Image (cartoon, rainbow, N blue to C red; front, side, top):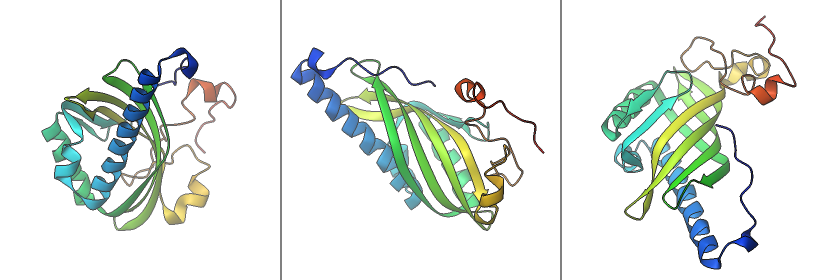
Length: 193
């Protein structure tokens, strides 16, 4: 998902339209914050309530793919069975609107996780679609991509490799940035050593 160009200057829009956009951005930011707290607190009921009924949630590496709120909850249960404590921290968040009730976003996140009986760290990006239903914003789709997912003791060495995704115990290629056309233009991918 490439980012669109910046939107038109605020001076070209009414105060009412600008305020509605600020309120929507704040509600969407709260949605993503609630998600992190629900996942870290293993609050499945709270997490489920953040997704539209027909929402989709998956990962670019194909390890996760669920469609529908019930399937998303089952996917969370499966993930939580393999994970201990976690701490997700959101960073940059860009949102753009395709209408008054539809938006897209990109959110960068870091997480500390106890997985497979090891301390692991990860950097990831969520590519989201949001829908406003009955006055509330929900996730319509989340696609998770990994920059890295590494055991803490492998971080210093593995960060320089392309196979930085170790979430499943087997080294896999990271989802980004090396596969982005804009990245490849300046630094072509070299074969794994």
